[in-house]
Length: 385
Ligand SMILES: [Zn+2]
Image (cartoon, rainbow, N blue to C red; front, side, top):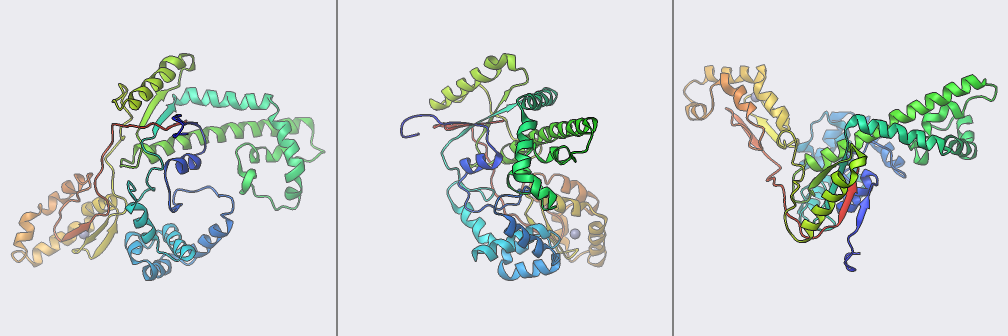
């Protein structure tokens, strides 16, 4: 499409679809994947099997095949350790090696591969939550009047009834897990002998459950936009322009025209009037940084956890103990560091990627610069809502 000088516009799609369109992912690190994926049964089972071994054993095994990854993971973090072990088992290459490879690709930053196409532009069509909920409910009602329940009944009779009778259906796989089917299980599986009143009540229950699931899904998608784009600055994270769809009667004014203006500016390599949504909230924290506190003889993973440690009573206790036992010997180190009573304050300013310097503590960081881009040249577009 690019060679024909056409601008591809992608509207909607699942998170996974959009992600695989945006990023050239070498390896799905799968840590965010909560939902079962087709064909993933075997892998999921293996992971569960591993997790049963317990954190210490898993960590020991990982340390043997992938010491780098083991150093970044806490022994209690069974899920991630099992995942890393599994990557090694499946591919014969250590997980840390995969991530390095991915990072090494131009533009890769370790959290996803490099961008598949240069300078994609993302429009986030967001709405006031109340307005959105009403719209979602209305959509469910529309689907119902278009014959959703009849369609589900037909599907149930053809593909599901036998499974339910054999007690082999758990709604975790394939099409059965999609929103709108399992919610009507009680209604569809109601015995023939049920009264009309009972059936109606089950039908209403299904409708309510479907509405709740739909709203939950919408929230999940918003969360995805925040986590995947807004909270993650980096060269390979496209900027996001927010467009407000709360009032659809003003569509042209609040969505269409601003979107066209942005595209027009970007295609001329100019900066659009409308600013992209900036990284929200606190600055990025390094969740995987490794800190060692020599005073307490402890290894701590993650900046937040490290900050908490520096404020902890235990740490203060060790700082005081060191002072008493070695008042003069440590002079240079102690003068460079804040007094013990102020260590907590120092911990507080560690929101940037520079860790606080505290007596007897060292840290290594695995992440580096952060920057947010503001200009684009080409413009493949992704609309996502
Ligand atoms: Zn300490």
